[in-house]
Length: 90
Image (cartoon, rainbow, N blue to C red; front, top):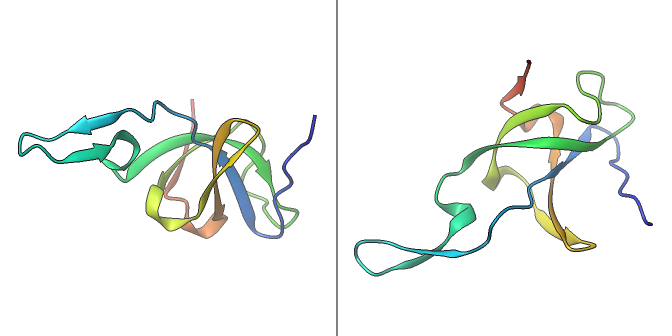
């Protein structure tokens, strides 16, 4: 199995979700993942310069702030830690 490694002040978030399409009342088809830009996700990797978070933490983020990519069948988002909005503390 290949692992992902975050670099510097970046974190990698697992954003795998249902990618089904949603049709608006006007008939416009939108990808489900972009209807709301604020979302939460689990941190799967942290860079060496990230002190505030660890793998497994949950955070709120703005989906449009970082590039998303597919790796081994799952969808991820890479972000600078300062672009995250909040940590979810249980």
